[in-house]
Length: 326
Image (cartoon, rainbow, N blue to C red; front, side):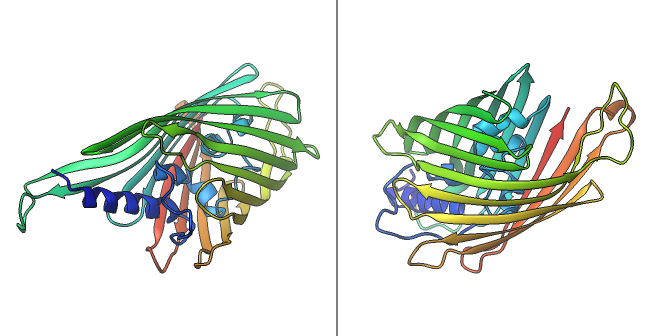
């Protein structure tokens, strides 16, 4: 049977893993006062490479984990999946899907963190057995444009934590707002995340995110065909976010930049500034490759993203993800 102390160790590892993509482990007076710490995992390689600044940019399927109102940027259908490689063989994954139905956009998401632990009846070299423990949240999202400039959205989530002898369930909700101003060059986003509770009475890591994003693009050189318009190509995106945990941590601020080259390759850099008594600043780097399919896949757009977040204290983190638009 898994000892209580082992459960506490695993919970600590999940908390550190959630922070690993962009910060050092935060230790403050309120630390450990909330449950379901895995919800702090930031979904998507592209947002992670931007230093965790995405609430205002919110223009692809990744926004389902950041600001559900941004799903109105999905034109037809988008699918994404991410694998996060960090330390202690803890696996973090996200999956998201969104589809437009006239003006309404709906989406479904999965966010999970899992690891394998060993069971022993005594001080043996080999374990008697192994068991997989972890936690996950599944969500259903809706987003709707109130006007050309204003979109609103929300996500309802079911939460499950399975820690062998200690299981917990809960429910939570995210709500968000996005403003698109200056002919869609300027984005302003606000989202409340993880408003809910576990069945044991523990609070969730509820937080407020607010962000700004400024984008530039160029019009295509070729004339668009009447039945197949050529979209403008993004060039620069400059982003800044404030992340304000409402129960158990201090604020953090995030900045990032993205530059697209040759309409197919993106370079990204980001930085996080945390207001803690312990060092919590963090650099992030990333790349993206985007191509359209040919022949039978002519109507499918593929994007592969990678983020690298170095951290001298808890180890380097790598994220690999893809987005498919069809």
